[in-house]
Image 1 (cartoon, helix red, strand yellow):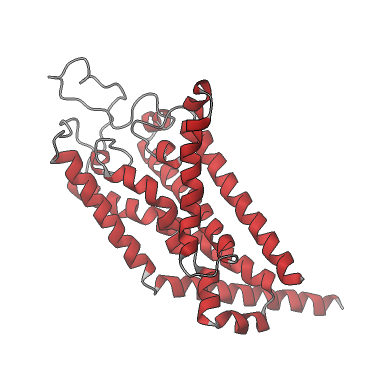
Image 2 (cartoon, rainbow, N blue to C red):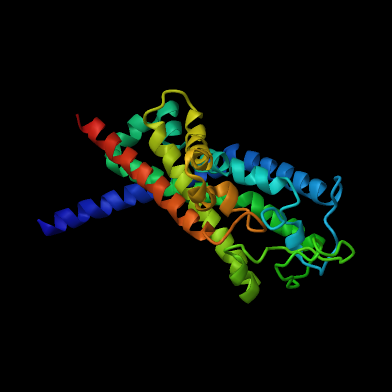
Length: 296
């Protein structure tokens, strides 16, 4: 009896692993990641132009590739656009798996070999990984270009000396009040790794919410807008809160806590963790609702 149960479990795991591989490889071969790479290149070009060729030109300082990276240079407009579009980018990468299975007609064939629970679990796992990769892809491209452009990593302290002395050729990469500054001051490579890991996890959570929402949305690709809509509400919420709460609440939006250079204050790390928790909880709730609906 036990041998039969073990064989059944092994067969289920093998089937889920096979489905996971198919979903990952199918998305990598689709148009989604080339489209995200194209979006990333546009954002990088926008960031470079606005930081070095617009009305305000970023002053020279010690050589470091961080000056050419989104999120680490608050002068360029590309970083702000990247923060705003990140939920859509992540959902584009990994949020359409369940919707693609339904619209292609493959879902019925898959359900004959695996239950709905296994299919959803596979979609959420693959979606999390794909969403994370899609979310960090523009920043990875930016990193490669920045290192080629300026292959140095000098430490620049977080005090803006230009404000008091305009002739002082100095501009901080990450300001001293940012939650990321202590890590930047201690180990820049570790700081970069933490930043990428945080964006990966956050993007994966965005993609999971899009997958959960796609079960209740009839039209294809509309699920891409769901994480964006929720993140927009989080960004706008402080406007209706008391003034003494707004300063803290502002840092719970990815538009703020992902702007490592300036806007991200001391509560940014708490905002990041709260966002990941919120989007995963919402995804889990939609997952359970979908399973119960299928069971009726």
